[in-house]
Length: 129
Image (cartoon, rainbow, N blue to C red; front, side, top):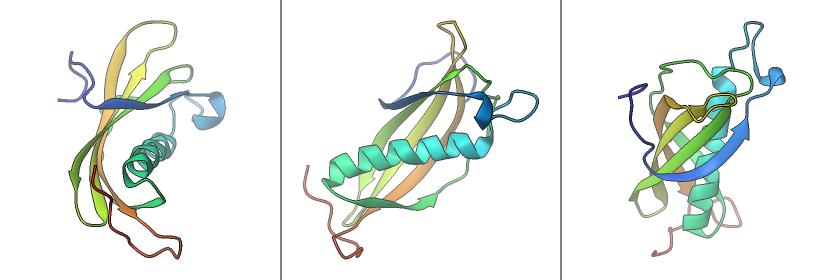
């Protein structure tokens, strides 16, 4: 459940600082920026697993339980849930480490589908682990 006392699931894949340029006038970080960080994390994790180029094929439903604020550290955790022939399904959790504290709050989660590509941009099999 989002926003309750729990610990992150998956591997910490990306940490970044939420800056004023990423926020609206009230100091809330844009949801699109958060989603972009999640996409970057999935790209990192999937490319490592595929040992090559990957692209995002789909993102399943996302809902924000609470805002990310300027100064928070955004922490994106990924877990490869399934590996198909050319695609991987990743479970992603995004947490905010609140500014100047050790408080971590889960702000959103989603499922991303990434596809491995060859040098010509065509889907290619994901190597065995």
